[in-house]
Image (cartoon, rainbow, N blue to C red; front, side, top):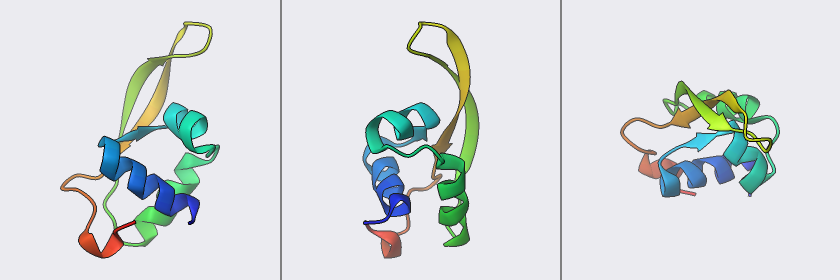
Length: 77
């Protein structure tokens, strides 16, 4: 399974994904590049900036990606 497919599946199951979640849960360190790939498939991916705590407890901003309207059935992972 490709990383883009893993990300699509994660968004379907959890509703969204952040760069922090992608690193910690999927081992994806280039989420924005994979989102670019997903968009090239014709999937509309929305990005919002959100505040999260890093491992030191400090607040930092990361991208949170969602797929408004959900993932099209033809992209079932």
